[in-house]
Length: 165
Image (tube, rainbow, N blue to C red):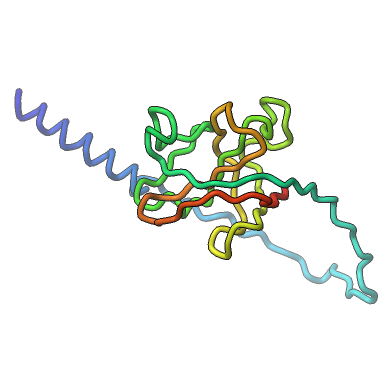
């Protein structure tokens, strides 16, 4: 009986590790579509210039946070939208938390999954981020960039520009 329990425990550990490292997910190749090039027409003139949608820019303050219980809630590796943070390299996600006044749930314009272009911090931290978390209700007009403890990044910046893409 103990052998069966031990075998079941080993199998469950193997399955958990395999799921964590995506060993059990089968990749199905996409079906190949046949394209008939004979009906394509040559371009004789340049296409009309399309106007890009107006991008709303907002000036906020920015800081960084680590996925630790004293800086988050009691589940530091799970964001507010349910995404799981990579424990080894949290900064690789390029995820950001926004203050509640900026989030759609509390009347703002940003929602989970929105892409933000952040400028005004540093060459290393400026760039594209995805909204995955919200901040404590005491913060207003602020964003929090997810980094890891080993990244050795600390700071608070005013006059940071964010643009929703």
